Length: 333
Image (cartoon, rainbow, N blue to C red; front, top):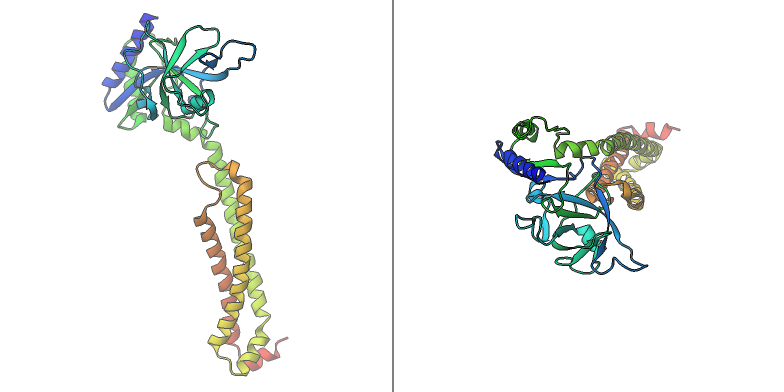
């Protein structure tokens, strides 16, 4: 164990010495890497005994100091692990926000103590961290307990680092300097967080692309249908337009009348469509990530587009009818 601990420390220092690397750490579980963390039943202090004792099954992650900085996981309260958290000192942990709320609902979990099933020692909570994704983007918040690697050694771990340059180019450099510590040490699964996020979002993005295509086709068909119906409706009034013009109505008066009547229909249809879209938004809210089902910009843009199409459908045939000789218009069936 001391040799493994020292190897982790040396690997971190080697990684930090690589060009453009800003911070580095070691962890037994890396977010979005597909690994399975250790699940342990955990109790708040004083609740581990008795026939009715019921703990919380929580994922544990053993990390070195600097892990939260390397992955940009903000600390809500408390502190990060430090060199003072080593073997032989009081055991400490950091909870993520989800674990803190589950174990200490309505309380401040900082400086509280927890106990792991079948273990007698108590672990003091020295920090609360923001809940980060563990297995997939958009997953339900996962409760997690972080332990210092110097107190809970993990024989299999991953090196994480943050770089100011392109991580794809920095990864081989970091791998080479760390590999120099032990040429027989296997290193595999090198990747970036952006690549893991992109891979995790492939299926949702593909589904969104297909829905966008189908939605675009539906919008085009709706525009064609609205134009056709409105155009046919106005064309049927050619005789009426001819009578009005024969009685002295001007082109502007006729166009204004047709456009006003068409506008009333457009406004009524837009109101009904907006209400229907708002109600349908509740049904698809579970399928959305990062956006709200009620997007006023999108709804307004689509409504405006259909309204313009409908008004053009009124204007074009009405304008055409006003150019027809009133006598010819009256003779049409």
